Image (cartoon, rainbow, N blue to C red; front, side):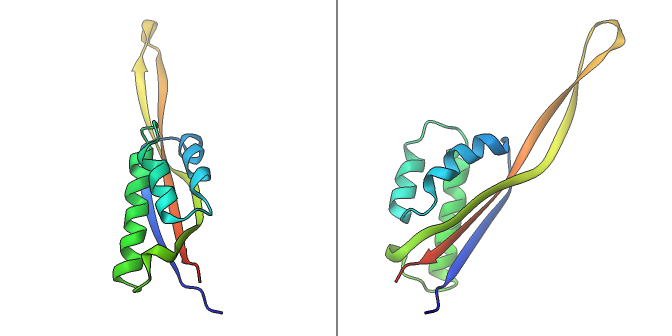
Length: 114
């Protein structure tokens, strides 16, 4: 049996990997409709970015691969580190403290369930 897979990657999510992974682990192995409902009603700021990536993967499945949307499930969803912006906050006596602004990379893989 050949299963078709479609993926979408979001490379620059302005949040840490731990915060993104809190939401992503809830949508793994779920149907598309369930995953979208979880993301729409989530209180976390990063859930909007994850929903955009999921919608992109759905559009890829529908337009590029002609898959049935009702049969799609989230096969894989994983988060990795991306770049880290470094900023400096001036302190007294000529010192400076480093502020690190992390970015994350999100990959969502959809599969057509037969």
